[in-house]
Image 1 (cartoon, one colour):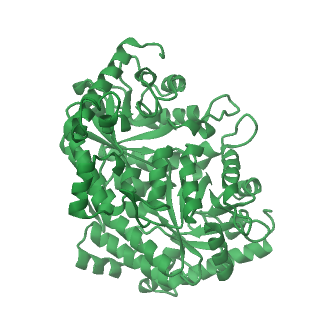
Image 2 (cartoon, one colour):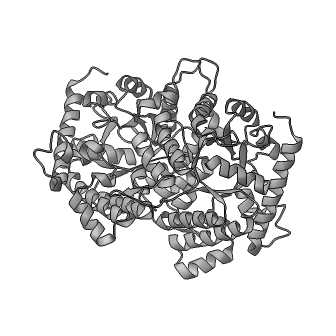
Image 3 (tube, one colour):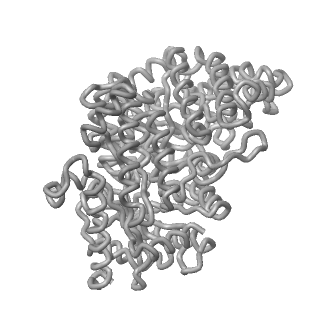
Length: 317
Length: 317
């Protein structure tokens, strides 16, 4: 069961944080870019190969520290077929290093189509009666709830069949998330609160040994007051918290999504880790070539930052 | 401008309907499947090649009849890299035949990530300062509004820069769409009505020569009463109407999304066209090998069905 594997890894590494691999080509140090362009041309393949080397080095630098990586599909699709191949190779390498892989694709559609997405990322495709290996085969996928239950059910069925997980968007970290998610219905509940209720309900059948469900939620670190309320609605859902670091959320903000057992959430940081080598904090200590060491240093700092907030900051609970 | 190209094509072909290419391998006639397996093996590549041949033959059979095809990304992603290559080749072939291509991906994310999706489907990626050709390069993309304006803006910017369009999910055709989209806020409006208001507002700057905007909406044929109301909120938005045919929507239902000028909407049918050769109506006339002829016959029937509903059925307006 996904959620049990996730919690086991969080406990083993004493770290509820996740490294987001959302690598635009501009993030990759010049020498890696140039080497890839020499070998593969200055096109989509060269760009994708540069990103692959960058990703693999970051994974090698952090795999013993973090339980999971989150791969943002958009940044791979942007480079076409070559980019998607690099998504696949990055995911494979991460899994070979014992990391859980979260595919951040925010997929959604009507039931018959949601089933096709679920097959691609969580299930196994069948070719004329022969069940094949998983196609993209991530451990968990983010999904969007705008279509309601029958757009979510195929993913949940595959979670049950293949030991996978999903994180359903509840309250996203971006500035305009209020436009739909904070709308208040006649009964006084917001859309995000109502969706949180669905997540809790839909996830009950997939509860694991720690009392948490493999049907999780996304709640941004940028809205800590709402996170407290949403946490209370979804007591047994694991929450993926984006928005820490570059988007402005602090460890104390992220802590709002956790339960008092110190579990119940994982916190993602993407740019603050993969671009640590350019940050005020680390750029004096690590050169551009040491981007992976800078990522490791920042991943350790983030782990300690969040653990400290969890042990000392009870303000939000 | 996308919406003008779309309306020109609708007028020229006297047809507001769209063929949806959402081809699961099971839809492909046995002989095409077997031939593809012999050449490419009975794996993802064989499956993808079978689908490609199926798609190309359907395009060749309908391109003079319809203004556009809609490719459902999930059904290509399901077959991995090979499937995505077939998506790209299908889109390319359709465009070479003068068809507009709508990528049905329902993509969504926070601003910086939405920009990456938009670059992949509507814009042009830059590799170290060099602007490349469009990566997937469709004419329009479906997007999900759950994240609000800053998740939509990057797509709209690319619509303006590259003459593309988007269709924002407002009211989807599936049974459980009510769970989020029909929730009613304190001011008496439903979520789908509020999103419809956003679509109208966001699209104003992209209004073309016919008074319609390249920022369109998705409203399912399965909810005709709501379509009338949503149409009145989004007077100038082009509406993509799924749900005709296999999902149960009739031509009269779909007509609810049109304006009295006979414009303002396009109606998609996927399974009822690509699987026409198995339908009660056509299977006596066409054998499995004539799936393309059956698709053409059904596309003509659908065109006439919708045009008749537009000319006679004023019930919903």
